[in-house]
Length: 339
Image (tube, rainbow, N blue to C red; front, side, top):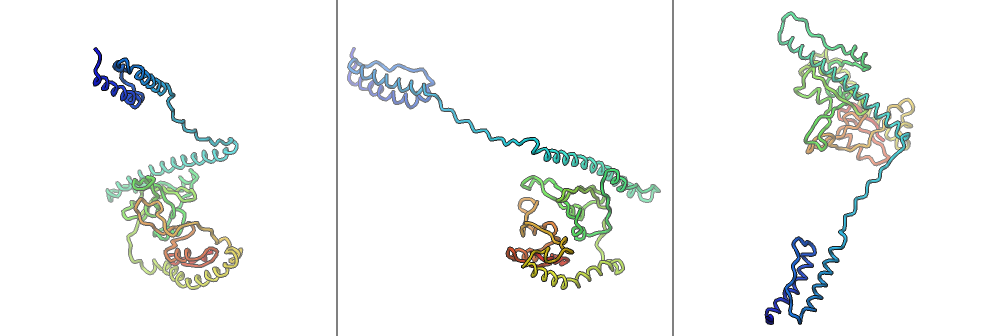
């Protein structure tokens, strides 16, 4: 039976749509089996066959096109240097690592001895007058001589004097700090020793900017009190001399700063005092230092500047490059000429 015109028209519409659907969907993802289009009347068979052949050729061409593979990332160029150029650096690094391991082992043994002594002494004090002899503290002189260390013991000292003395007074240690950007921060030795609630006979390790390592502990502490004049005579006399010398020091520093405007500071002070000239910096007025995130900035404490203070920083940063000035530090114990 011949299909009527309405049926033939519907079939032609299906054939015209199907190649487009094949190109958009089946060519991209032909997951199902291909189906033959229904047969057309004899009058349209040639035209339909050409359309079907064109669609098949297009699909075959797309199927046979090679898939584009992403370009492989270029390998980073390796910068290799001959062994003889880095041999000294390698030896220095190995030497530092061995020295660090040795010092860590010595400090660990010292910490064990000190902790044992502190426990024995605490038990002895708790028993009161039991007739037992007082435990003997570790012999620092003997240990230091055997291990190649330097042993020192201070007299009663306050935090400002310890900081001004330098050495261990300016040392620090790295401690964990989850709030810090790097997970650690620097804790000053002064904080570990003089902080409220710090414990006596607790082993403390620290280091300074020059790479020196320190092992220390607090033996005892005294509460703040008003000393007698006999006890404070030396301190009072020293403070009086500092106060009386301030005008002379300020005048001399101003003279040096004025003369340094035409020549360098070493040339201005002469050979006898040239060793007292220090190159400091660069440094900033304020710094966050090793404090944790959110901590307020504080005044920088550059090396060779003792408690510079706000007035000192203001004088330094208000002086143009190439000019000179003078200013006292915060406690007004030093008034250097700055150029």
